[in-house]
Image: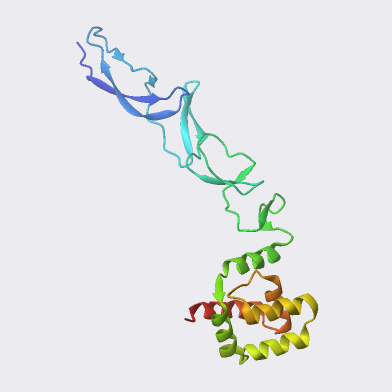
Length: 213
């Protein structure tokens, strides 16, 4: 009588025929002709080849390789929203694996994220908002250290160069404001236009002022 191994390797599948892993089938103790008790959702086949980005599926008596992006992070082209792939199959044409930068939109023609029309303006406004808050003392000290202009000098320039509502606002800020923010448009224009401080230099001044006690 031929001897049969007590177990043989078999491929385990899920309900959709996708390869799960290898397991074993036991030799049927009743039928003595080499019959094995194949577990449910298992098949007798060689273990499928591993291919990155694909999962084997048993179909029509053979292995077929289906794209598998589960766990990958993608971004909706329409909104830039971040998502994690949970289903097997090709990636939708509505998503990309490239992460968007702030103030960009997807261009199908370029196949990439491109700046929105007013991206520079939006980035500048975002930078202003993130610059933080400084006190009047910190601001006046930094301006005097870097530009040699004290409070009286600033008032003189404002009264010489500005009129109307803008003058009133800037005069009040120099004399009375407790805190300053760069997203204050009147203040921003006073620094960049009236005092002719370049935006990059103004951000540097702000960082310096934040360090002032």
